[in-house]
Image 1 (tube, rainbow, N blue to C red):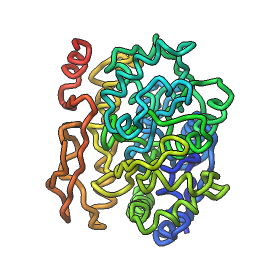
Image 2 (cartoon, rainbow, N blue to C red; image 1 turned 90 degrees about the vertical axis):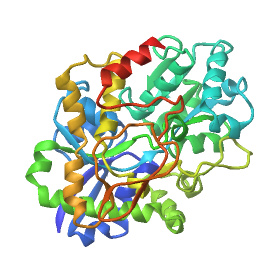
Image 3 (cartoon, helix red, strand yellow; image 1 turned 30 degrees about the vertical axis):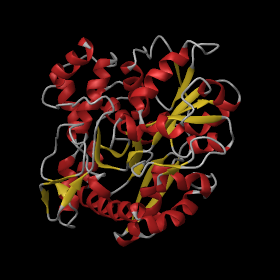
Length: 402
């Protein structure tokens, strides 16, 4: 078998990689999959860039940032497969949340009202709120900025964003070092179970089907190992389908709970998989059926338009100087061509296009697909905006004007 090492962080959305190893999907493709547990996104990034691993479970914006030279070590990265969509949540301390609407279901379901509520609560807090983010160039951070700015909150002035590894968020909240955090599962559930935090907003309601983690390669390695990459993507696609099957969720949670992976109780991992979320200690669960997706609705397909939305937010927050070259390089990180090459022969349903209007679908819609029928789920932004990847400059001008 061919060995492949993939770096990952202990998060529920590493599930596809874990299932590929533990359920034999990698072995079926003659791959000896080794998963290398990392403690922070910076460490994981370095392991990939310096060739200690062949691939990584990576924040989608970080893959683009490394390619654009925005992160510490510049390198050309490629992401031909998304490992999940949705999955993160904003959790605030019980002290801060006391100033918010106490109706948790309404709070999660209505991010517009929650954003304005949050803005008002800032002035009532005893200090400028300190919010933990897993990386300044993460999907979580970009969604938080987008949500706060809608309500007139300047994320660089009105709150303090502090970078912490996901696994340290709950400890920092317990110690009072931060007032809240936005991170992937299971950490919001852990904070709620300990009674020290409660969920304020869900990524799945800020941007439905918002891009989260990708499988990232160094581009030269990926191109030199085309046949191996194709086999790996077939294994991951089959693992993703297994992960999305409700009948497998309890087994998956138990596997992820192991010390080699997430190392948290299965009962705190399961909610993100089932969509039955307990946002505050002692409360009944609320249901968000699309809290975390791995396979259905072409969740793994790397839409180039989503890479360009990430680029647009880099420009918006002055993380990169806008240019045609940077825009093209950002789009090129999401390699839908490799996805088509690897999975087209396997009969995996996939879109006929590689870009779409992001935020335009408010209901499931059947779309043109290769090989089999495909329905895409709603992908709305909470504020109703639509992102046209062919007109990034106009989109940014409209954001500034309002």
